[in-house]
Image 1 (cartoon, rainbow, N blue to C red):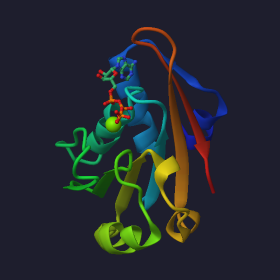
Image 2 (cartoon, rainbow, N blue to C red; image 1 turned 180 degrees about the vertical axis):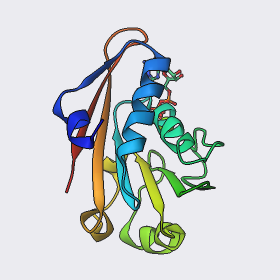
Image 3 (cartoon, protein in one colour; image 1 turned 45 degrees about the vertical axis):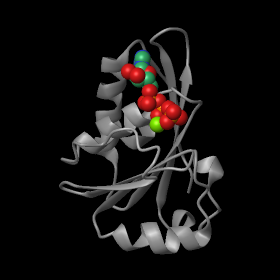
Length: 148
Ligand SMILES: Nc1ncnc2c1ncn2[C@@H]1O[C@H](COP(=O)(O)OP(=O)(O)OP(=O)(O)O)[C@@H](O)[C@H]1O
Ligand SMILES: [Mg+2]
């Protein structure tokens, strides 16, 4: 399945397992050096989705990172996971705390991108929005869209 197919219509997940399978499908379409912007309310499933994407690249230990807002997971790709819920990310934070970790091939997963300063790094790379919305107990609507 291509990325174009995945962005055409939102995916309706009826449970964690289906979300995991969808995350893996998306991961398989990604090019090296991509940014995923994970949107959705508290508990929507951004970390859950991120961990299944990361697993596809051999990065296993990804869990919720409320304190460490940047965590690095070396697998087949360098997977960097950030959560800006508590700590807003300024441009200088990006330059000092994130950019140095981006050794090719990398994948940058960002939860709460709304709280991040606009950064030229995102504009200059492949970036995708992944919006996860609750649709009743255990169900989620997942919409993937290209940013650039
Ligand atoms: N269909 C589903 N897809 C994904 N997660 C689901 C689904 N159904 C239930 N869940 C559960 O929803 C929860 C999502 O939690 P998660 O920590 O991933 O949310 P989050 O969006 O990262 O929240 P936060 O903004 O607090 O970081 C998990 O406990 C997960 O098991
Ligand atoms: Mg989270």
